[in-house]
Length: 373
Image (cartoon, rainbow, N blue to C red; front, side, top):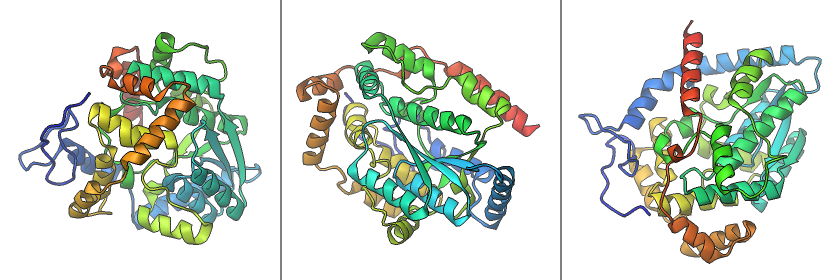
């Protein structure tokens, strides 16, 4: 378990040495915000230039999808980013197939948000429910593996399911809610690539009990070769072409869609709330709020002073932590004591298990070279 100690904190954002790989320059600014600022002009356009680029993309999508039932596809979790993206799609008069991948952990609030959004915007919703017995077995295997990123089983299924529905419905454009404004900073040491199916299979082969027969998955070849170059699939990060402010988006959706906030980033999933607010801080000493708030600071959505104040606020009361631990344990068919014992075991790194990290690095280098040419 991670021991408490004094941390050095960045002078510009609020990242600190709870990230074991953080470095600081002579001014006391960390590598995370330096890297984010160096990359922001390449893919973040919160201005008229971005609106023009987005209008061009939308025009192409409408033209190519003119005689199709749907011109794009959007994954909807009920959270802020994906919900606002669906709202914006309606404003731009797109015709998306809205897909929700149910991994078994939706909060009632997330379900209500999803229902309100598609009903008020008159969009078709397709919900795919992942086989619970397989998901449960895989998630328990990841806890037994004692790695940091416990969201991998869900995240991989969500991406794989979304791409599957896109190809089945001959949809070329996939909208992705990831964005610079709220997600420019995330230390690699705090997790690992959710799209690495070799990593998933490695952990499951050691700690799992049943075969993954129906679990949605996608290989490196299928995602980056088949989908990209054969099916010509394009991922559109719509929110990077707008002046995206999370608080403003929340207020708009509350007023227009009857949308309700659930407390923190990605807490629309009860599992993810427990993972981010309890498991990571308690076991590894990683508090994702630092990365989320630092991203807002770098994008200019929040001052560093306000970020520090926000970080100090209680966001996960002990009674809620106890309820979530017992709830997650019950869903995974183990006792709370067995679950606590699992969390107390020695921490492991993703590199302790087989993975395709080198393949991903090589593939991304080739991709970047192609983009430059």
